[in-house]
Length: 441
Image 1 (spheres, rainbow, N blue to C red):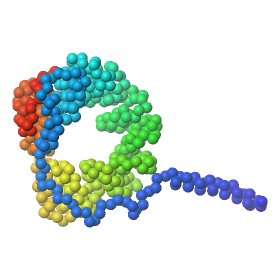
Image 2: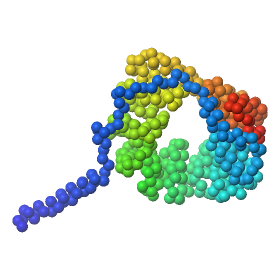
Image 3: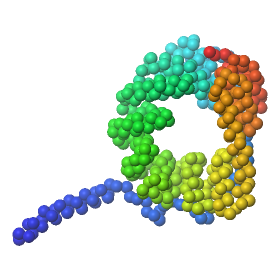
Image 4: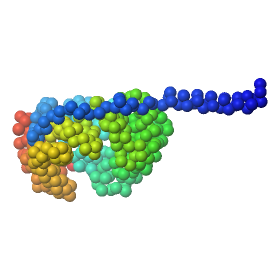
């Protein structure tokens, strides 16, 4: 073999290895969506006529509460431990938080929980803690979660509940310590408790700690879809866009159909700070998300904003009109639709939507003022009932019912609150629950 050929052979071998490596990488990497395959809103779409004004939600509330008629007529505390536990679950899920608290507290105080299975007993304590939190009974919730943690020191869900109870009592330093302890106690390889804790940390702006926890979870369970998705969005929130992109690419390669994955990736692609911003691909993935979660308000709001940014006003009108068919009392969606109509030159429809939006916006502002008054003094009957009457006057019966339960849990003189509850239940042909006549500490 000539001397020049001997020198060339190693170079050819190296080149061959490089070409094989590139071929393997291309084969294993997810293929980009071809431009001509991207989903896009059609130019021939016809927007539905948005509802003129929101209707009251009394039928919706009645449908939920009608299932409780039999439970409501029972004497409080009657029945075996397991049947009472199930009654507490049923009432809670139907939205009657006060009755759930009464039933479960009765079960607990009579020490009947010892007759439940260990798993049921823990679930009962968890549900009682949640009911106390929703009713603003933070001291009671604190006691429930502390009791549960005495039995199960590493129960992450109980630690999360304890954190919320401390925050409700404005004991924020203790709340932070609880979350830190929870992160240290997370020794299980099961990712679900870790995901719950990461969400809680993010909610209270402990983002660095949440990110560290998610990175640890991902290291331990690299193939877990939910962990990878949560970590990708945590990177996005920290503006570590390249890391987020790498994880989304890996998730898409699995070909798992997931609305949240498509939505989160679209949010990244639409971000003006992202150097690889791609509005066409963002639209594609928002639409893929909507194919799986057609009524998702958040996705539709973001898609509408994307259309407005591109001055595609007819498409924006289509998106916001569809959004309003699901949430007709949204002042924000009404104003967004009015803006889209105005930009398209349709001043008449723009004015119409603004007229509907104005009282809705005023309603929401008044609600915030009244909620502030209630939060300052939960036991103030006048403040509580002012908020209830505001909801009733605006056809928001579900919120009125929820607020009446909170008032019942706090007001010392419950007579007026019970009368309001009876009046509301009479509208639906339902009896006043016997649980509403029980006073709890």
